[in-house]
Length: 159
Image: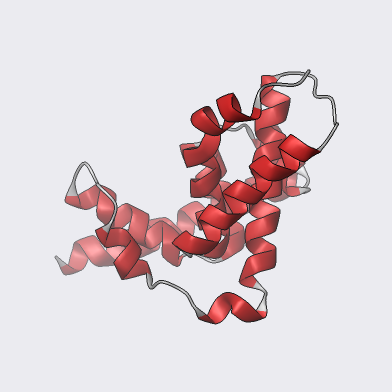
């Protein structure tokens, strides 16, 4: 199965960007990673089983591209998290605080939390996307939740 690249871009661009941003923490790099994923899809001749398979493949490629960029020499030109947060719209102050704390989590926890809660992937699907076992994904989700709970508890207790 193949879909038109423009149609995929219209539907998945924001999700690819969000997943890539979780991996690298930089808006410019995340945008590049999302575009690279779409470009690789366009130039590949790979056949997919379904639209879900395409979506998972695109997310995996975007995350891997973002990780590669974050390790590169050019990583020095980053946008601070605060600058990026100013460009986002949140439903409430709590949503803003939760996003900030998720972004402060270590990458391995931040990615699984993003894919699970924001992209609605199952543990098995996250494992396939990130190349992890299901038990490893469950452990990372559990530890990420615990770190998030502790961080948010501290912030809300201070207020």
